[in-house]
Image 1 (cartoon, rainbow, N blue to C red):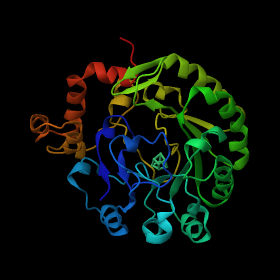
Image 2: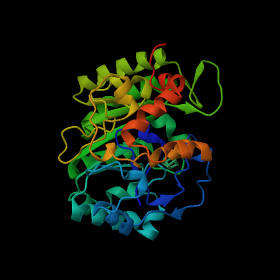
Image 3: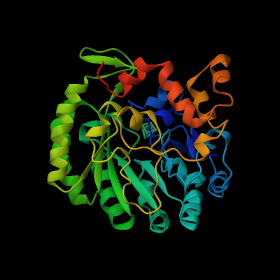
Length: 338
Ligand code: SF4
């Protein structure tokens, strides 16, 4: 069943769905590897679970959501990796999405997405496709995935067949700035709608990095300088610019970094700390005010004591309580000046 965890405090599209566990693209930088061996590819969620969600069955962790929030598909593994050829779980899910017109965002590097049978379904779906690609220098880090140039060809095909394609330039590393900047024109020519940038999060300390939360990341001002130039270049070629980096989210053309603005029936969640701390508009829905709708926050706590503190609370109240418990951490994550 689609799930919602700790990302609910920072992300506008926090309800996730994965048709596989593990990923044969085996990117060297994959953050999932930090807590899980991704080499074992197992089946993940099914089209039946997806349909149950779409028709109104919501697990407790999503009981705060009383509208058809777009699903984010493929955050922890690639739905169109080679294993899909055998299991066809993603194909079955596409059939459900096409039939129901439920909105979704799918992230992939997998070539299978441009096979004819998949394109036929995608054409009927209400979706935004994100292709993750930074530049050719990353091919060595992504040896199980199609090359950068192959992905660019995929973007050209997808742009002719789906409602919207965005390029996810993530994880961005400062040493490839020049290549990324030069590629922006090519993304536009391929038919992309926009680009999304987000800096690399390193697990270990390195010279020049700063610690934010549990990660070591580039200094905010260094990224800001790079992003300003990438934004200018994107706009020069008619592309929208979005920032996945929490500290710099307001640099984006929209607060929601998935690039879903003006898509029919795409309504994200604006009631999260990112909007609240940046004084951006947010909306609290009726379901969020009800008791026992804060269960999704349990993923932020290992201890029974933490879980106890959430019991009976509403999503609306606990969002603020969560901030008050760790203001220093959240101010850092969202780049608020002290
Ligand atoms: S495609 Fe995504 S999930 Fe798969 S290995 Fe690469 S970073 Fe991890």
